[in-house]
Length: 80
Image (cartoon, rainbow, N blue to C red; front, side, top):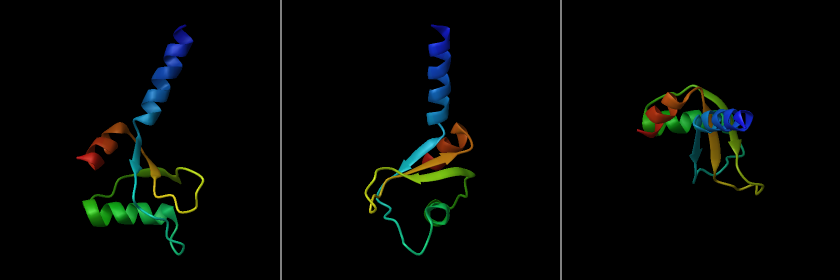
């Protein structure tokens, strides 16, 4: 059983580094890797260290984006 608990803790720690942004449509001329940091910097005046950016869902016009940051403290800073 300890293995399952450890796995669950690791998964929770991994998820704590994610932020979901919704309502931001994809732009054909700009990659999400560039779009998301620019959007955050322009609207929140911070520049977080982003590890990964990916669209959620299969529709091409999906507006939900999962942004993975370096740690959960960076997520707290971004949200506040």
